[in-house]
Image (cartoon, rainbow over all chains, first blue to last red; front, side, top):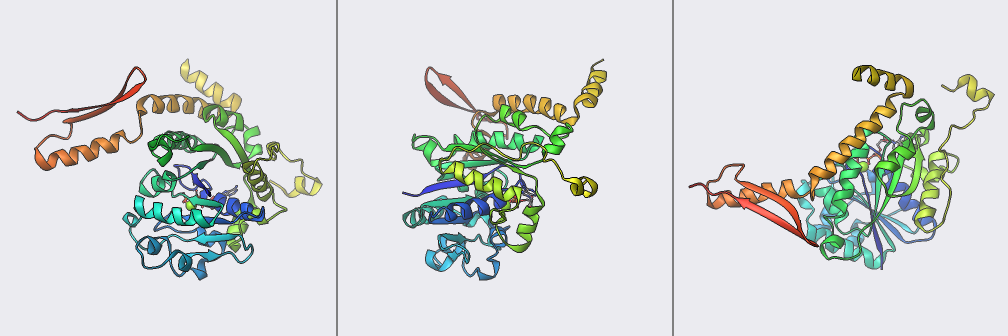
Length: 269
Length: 82
Ligand SMILES: Nc1ncnc2c1ncn2[C@@H]1O[C@H](COP(=O)(O)OP(=O)(O)OP(=O)(O)O)[C@@H](O)[C@H]1O
Ligand SMILES: [Mg+2]
């Protein structure tokens, strides 16, 4: 039986899509048959981050409305044979996603895949609640910043009340905290909430800390999930996060300021 | 005095300390006020349905969640016009 994982946050622009792409690619690299689904109807960009935007023919909404079947809409990743993408619709209205429709598609995907990763849109409206409704696990993406932490806290409340598992009195959704865009330099200067502060407020299992990194922008520019940039701190942190999700016990890295070499000190900010 | 403290805090620890303090208050408030997060939407939806049949005001419906022993109780109050 597949596990359905929602990547959620409440607040927009905190790194859900970046995380969905990296996490799905990471699971695939561990040999698991994985599908990543874009729930951001109208604002789809998972396909851009995955670098498959020119191969989109049919989308999630086409499948729900019966205009295409699942196998026509799935895009096979060119880098990893275990990885598939189900893109969101660009133009249709948000009402196109229905609880039953989403349920049907996810059930079908669950027969064929080990992991179904759902990239949630921002907010607490329909798209976001649908993305989490069928989830077994949730990764709450949070930036160390007031409004993001607050929205994550609200999201955690919604996760425990508005889901299939809650409604059917099943074991609750497993929730994990992922802190992204973390900058030890700014924490040191007292400009950014420290990891401990965030954890004190959101007491979830910490599955990873992704540092602020130029590599993320580079990766999205070229349509390559940042986890494949193995030199980068963000890529390595995502890779650790995937291993932790799969049960490995790894210490968190990139939490303190990296000592710069002479050149770094001369030219770095 | 309080204002002075505010600036002292800011200077000593940077704005992150203030962020943390504000967050703790904010989150505590959200959690207390919250009840289930669907309450506002539920209230809104109920009102729309009721207004199909009876001309009630926007504040005619109140919804709250309470506890009776181990049971959660959803309490609805609808005030009909006389
Ligand atoms: N670790 C990071 N370091 C630097 N930049 C990052 C990092 N993570 C995300 N970003 C940048 O933040 C922006 C938002 O990222 P992303 O699109 O993944 O967020 P999102 O939560 O999916 O947004 P939305 O809510 O709009 O769907 C992007 O420009 C991305 O490059
Ligand atoms: Mg996104």
